[in-house]
Image (cartoon, rainbow, N blue to C red; front, side, top):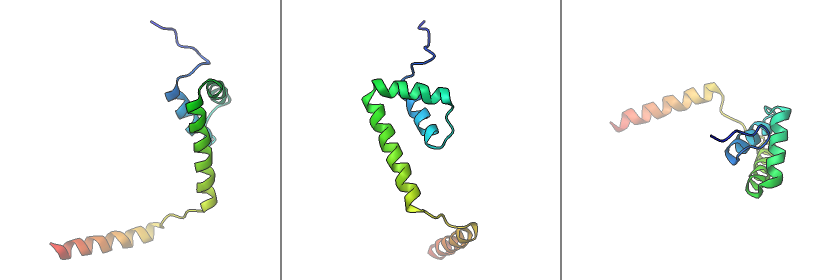
Length: 86
């Protein structure tokens, strides 16, 4: 059985840490592991770059979600319309 390295991670783990890092949920050790992996893996480096761009664009877009009240109104309209069609 292979002994798992404490510093070297695979691409699946790198993606998870990259996503955590975007939301400031990664530990400093996770970030160290990710940066070490990114030095060696071009695909994960590209993923990380794209993830950073996407996060930046979403925050600049100032996206707004519907309020709970608006959601309830929409649900009632949909229910009413679906009952009419039956």
